[in-house]
Amino acid sequence: MQQIIKCGNITADTEQTIHTIRHDKLFVLTDEYTNRYCLPMIEGIPAIREAQQIVIPANDTNKTIENVIQVWRNLTQKGATRHSLLINLGGGMVTDLGGFAAATFKRGITYINIPTTLLGAVDAAVGGKTGVNFEGLKNEIGAFYPAEYVLIWSEFFRTLPQKEILSGFAEMIKHALIHSQLDLEKLLTFSANDIDYAWLNDMVHRSVSIKEAIVEKDPFEKNIRKALNLGHTVGHAFESFAIEAGKPVPHGYAVAWGLIAELYLSHRLCDFPKEKVQKTVRFLQANYGALPIGCDDYEALFKIMQHDKKNEAGVINFTLLSDIGNVKIDQNADKELIFEALDFYRDSVGL
Ligand SMILES: NC(=O)c1ccc[n+]([C@@H]2O[C@H](COP(=O)([O-])OP(=O)(O)OC[C@H]3O[C@@H](n4cnc5c(N)ncnc54)[C@H](O)[C@@H]3O)[C@@H](O)[C@H]2O)c1
Ligand SMILES: O=C(O)C(=O)C[C@@H](O)[C@H](O)[C@H](O)COP(=O)(O)O
Ligand SMILES: [Zn+2]
Image (cartoon, rainbow, N blue to C red; front, side, top):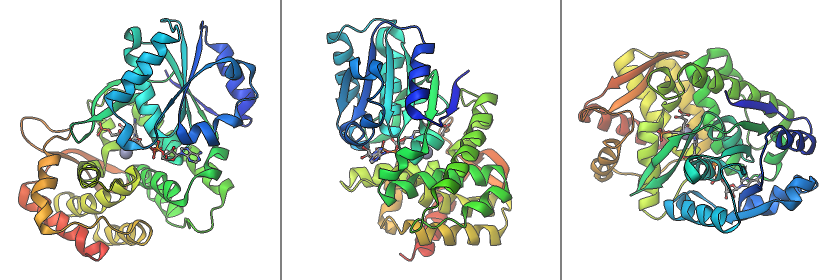
């Protein structure tokens, strides 16, 4: 089982975790920004100072197999063995890519995730989904291969741009939607212009525990883990579409817009209450703006949804809700209804 540590002191907790895992060489993977902003916060640890560093370019357009090869190459050239330990210090891009590199190098080495974004802490670093984008599709290549430890320290978020805070917050909204009305009510009070970091830290721990409980029940997404994919069938289509258009958007923004469309489908197919759609959509619209799409783009978006990993035998499977906390997996919507949901998205965000 993956161990999640809520850090009080990142230096002491990291040092202790490193000592807990028997290893020969230590490697630290960062991207260009986490190397600058986050590595200095743990560089006081002698083991980190002496570790081999691997730096990859930042952002999701670099979550590619080519950069996995760069990591493999560094590991090989710097003498990594099957007993080496990798620390992924970064957001979801670094933990997804680094986790996949760890899963595949010499058929698997141990790794630790230290998420430095809100999204990484509440979602990406936890639960063992690793991978890279491929052929314009999100996480098309990957493996379930959990980090041995995930160290969560909210102080990293202080250097995050507001956009990245909001991106992570969208996954927290998703966790609340699949879990409870009370969690959602609390999150809908959030103001990104006036962040209360102590409150956010509490909400982070709550959000992680929602994900952790689901992953523990179904680590390989055969069943209830599909709950964590709420908003992602449409969300990933939006995200891939934006990358293809040369205007990438943060993952959480795509999820927020995907939630709008999928709450509509939840209402139409599972009787999710209309007033709860409206209340959540109001928050999403106010905080996330819009990905500009027109009716002409629906076919392209539908085509991307046909590659969603929850699909089976040519049927697009959605995770929907009949109420907050009441998840319905493997729900089919036909093309006409999906287009209606895209109409609803456009109306809701003022396009
Ligand atoms: N494996 C999973 O379960 C899972 C879950 C959700 C999302 N994801 C994936 O996670 C990725 C998105 O992760 P993300 O939102 O963390 O994006 P990211 O890793 O690309 O980070 C966003 C930006 O913030 C910078 N950054 C990171 N930490 C910083 C800090 N403390 N201060 C300043 N800048 C910092 C990064 O360098 C980058 O430029 C996507 O690829 C998504 O598909 C995976
Ligand atoms: O952990 C999960 O399970 C999730 O689905 C979490 C999602 O937020 C995350 O974006 C995940 O990477 C999506 O996975 P995919 O299987 O749809 O690629
Ligand atoms: Zn996600």
